[in-house]
Image (cartoon, rainbow, N blue to C red):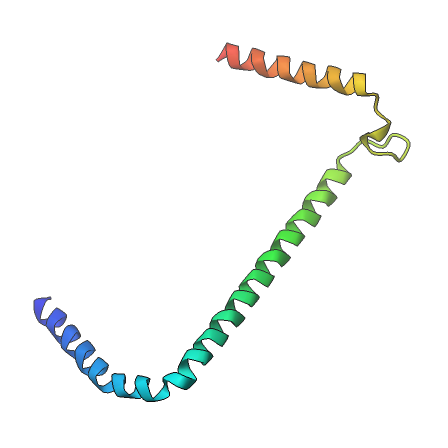
Length: 102
């Protein structure tokens, strides 16, 4: 393993010795090309991420709207605020009872 490590180090140093003049000569081309490639990659990755997020949001909206009970074709807007407050109070009390039981 020590021999392989030494060979790898020697190969790396020799490659660096050979490549350094080429990198210096071609750096006016390589640096802008590298920046361009980095920007293109970042753009495609962010585009894909935003697209995946949009699909996730649309899927969530579809599932959310499908589970709502039909009552007059309206969302939760026709529910009385007092009923909603009562439902939240019952839910909170139920969660407290569950926590105390464990």
